[in-house]
Length: 543
Image (cartoon, rainbow, N blue to C red; front, side):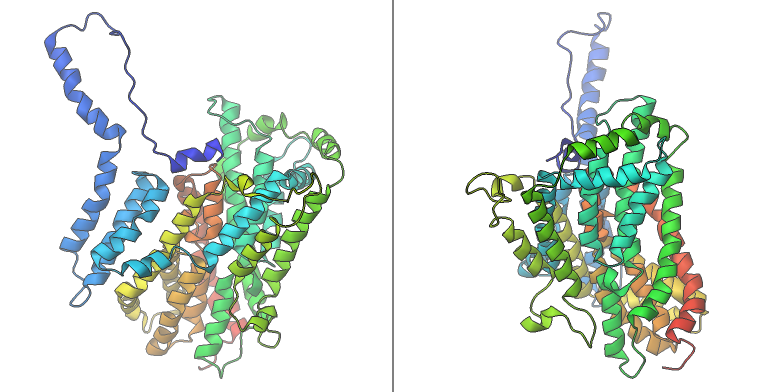
């Protein structure tokens, strides 16, 4: 594993080292020695994060003891306690993130949220298969330096001469945004992240404290966060960009079959302006937070355009192995895009009666890498299991925890309680309804995937629309869009996990950068849905 990542998965506790001889000979009295001895246990507690470890179960215990959600809602109350426990361990890094992610495996059965088999199944489903297979493909791209070739092309095109950090960020984010409009967010992030890290590998790594080193580290954060967020924002623009939009279309036609369906063009008429507003906000946020007047000067020593083009020419033509890896990856993208298209053109999955998913074909195509010869040595394949030692199983556990929490919300009844709390929206203005529905969905999505949140929330919002007498899309569209505003935590989406796993960004970086984007997203939806959305979706008509 990249040493930059190790801080996220290993214990951050450092051994307390002591000098062999006293530093000051004048400290000889017994009182001073007793004072130092008395400080040692406290220092040990702080160094080993015992307070953070204890804070998780303490918070869970207080919630279970003091919070009353009403009769028959003990499981929902316990779910809140478990959520607080896991969340505190995630935020404080009390234990390695992977260990904290395994906590639901024992907390859910112990607290009566769900049984052991149910919670264990959440740790391996089609989405996790998608990520696992994609990780193998990403390792193949990295092994054959394909990401380096693409990184050199993008960097030499957009870096400017002299280096213009804002222009380079625009090129990286804009490329990711466009690709994500046509393929799912997660594959887009997995494809572009090696490109981003390929650019960053040209920059010096380490913990140097010079001003230039700090500028480089800040710009590295901006590049990784830009890929993660641009992928999520681009997916908002089209129906094929993310599963949440497809789920919205499916549930709208299921709950209201007599209404006009949401088509590709109608959604793009609303989703693209929304996505462009968010993309502009993303670029401005990254430039303001991570670029300064000195960033270009700090990067110029490593990103000279002439030197980049010379390095690109030195790579020479693509070898057979590189072409085959790209062919496998390209074939996978085509399979992803054509698995399910429209009601009239169902896609190739109909041949298998809908039993296959994106994870199915991802694992299948990843398997081909272990079969196709590399063309280098006799019997050598494109990939072998030795090359997969860097597979980050910690990420799989983190995703599994997110899915387990989503199931816990549903099985414990906590979702029903939250939906009941939205009853006050009856008679409220459209601006308020859209904002509240978006925030409601946006909070849940930070703890689980976009698709899982959409599946969980939209049926509740559809029924709520009927109950309070408003057009259901006034609630359902914000529910789907809010589910895609998962910008704060790694558990929000597989794309977030991919960015977090690079080691360049921390949870704090995601919260600080993602919060303004989330607020702007809610504000943009609140304005666009009752205006542009009313025209596009015909929300002025009775349902």
